[in-house]
Amino acid sequence: MIKRILPYFKKYKKYPFFAMIAILIEVLCEVIQPVIVANIIDKGVSQKNLEFIVQQGLLMVGLSIIALIAGMLGAKFASLAGTNVASELRRAEMAKIQGFSFHNIDYFSNASLVTRLSSDVTSVQNTIIMTLRILSRAPLMLFITIFLVVQINAPLSLVLIIAVPFLVLALALILSIAFPRFKKLQQAVDSINRTLQENFIGIRVVKSFVREDYEREKFNAVNTTFKERALRAMMVVIFNGPAMQLAIYACTIAVMWYGGNMAIAGGITNGELISFLSYITQIFMSLMMMSFVFIMFTMTKASMDRIFEVLDTEIDIVEKTHAQSRPHIQGDVSFEHVYFSYGKDQTEEALSDIHFDIKAGQVFGIIGPTGSGKTSLVQLIPRLFDTTKGCVKVGGVDVKEFTFKDLRQHVSMVLQKNTLFSGTIRENLLWGNEQASEDDLIQAAKYAQAHDFIMEMPDGYDTWVEQGGGNFSGGQKQRLCIARAMVRKPAVLILDDSTSAVDTATDSHIREAFFNHFPDTTVIIIAQRISSIQGADNILVLEDGKMSALGNHEMLLENSDMYRDIYETQMKGAQV
Image (tube, rainbow, N blue to C red; front, side):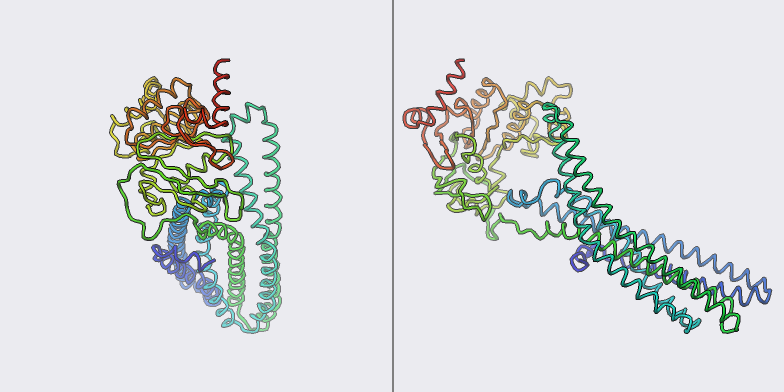
């Protein structure tokens, strides 16, 4: 675990060094104090030398002030190291997740990724801070104090030989039981986050179906599981403190008994005995601090494993090392006998032998029943997924030969789930093109039939968008997402059932904009309504991941039974 985390200290290695120096000064100041106390008792009090007592007392005060300042500096540098390393871990995780394919993202739940970026990294951060302070302080204090107690009275220091092995065995037993329990505890945290996330995102559905009691019971179940696992983990850890206290009290009693007899016999002075007791306490406090660190390691190892599981995940869709930058591409799209399945081990094909060509500037429609593979097909174009077999080309070039930036800069996609981000409408539209002018934004909004409702709002394009676009209707979110894609002026624009929440008249105006104002843009429309794709140059009919028919509206009415059935059903529904 330490080996894995060390590279993240590279830019901040000065902070651990400064922390260790400060803590060394603090330790030296503290271990000198019992020697001064012994001198005060043996030389000052016994000889009634007030001047010596005052002198040594002032020395103790000075050392205490130095120890206080050094301790504060040690804590500061340790905190700087831990916080910066945690920041690097979060940055590395976020960068890795941003490079994930949809396959990779599906492997981890959203709730789990949030936990790994937040509480897991925070756990590592706290452990680094405590480790730098304690593992610098405790071993130094332990070795120095052991040396000093042996110097004071070697026979009396033999009491440590009995106590230390007992503590080591107790700690080993505690850690062996605690680790698997803390691992299960982290899984319970994931379950709580997942339940809360689902509930909060779908709160409108919960209330619409009056399922508050069900969701409350579901949360209570995962919350109870978390509580029970937390208690099981903590019930092991709490034995560490009593074991340490038992050892400290037993050693103190032994030292008082044997040391007292030695003091009576003149084998040790009163001051030496008191300083010996102080050092025994410091030794066991050092051992207690070290055991606390080992327990924190055990708790943190589960978090570290989860963090590095993300960082070590092999991204299955990557750029080729020789991929050339292509800042300008044409909108031709070709599918050459494409096959696709979800997951490496799944034998069932989501798409089978898909082959067609779309010329730049054409409007291409896709229709078919639910589960026929429409969304899977279009997600292959910007390489959100990769083909199992076959080849997808844009502008005559295999999409695998593009850099992600170039490909996705020129292939805009409006997904089924319309996602807006917290910020203003203007900021959301600028996602399409950061350099877009105000006129560009307004023109795109007009094409997407969004300008009118935007201007009806008090702040116009500066209207605040709540997280997920919660303060907009489904149709408004769709139109804003379409406008955002139009702002980019892409070579290929994909609309995945993106006008399902707007009325037919608005849908017609949006389609008209594609035909009249984007002559060089290839537009691919997935639709449930034939009216949305009726004027397309070509329409692909999918069924069970296979091509059922391909042609324009008139050709399909004549040659495709499925297309004709859909059309007649929708026409009858419109008449009714």
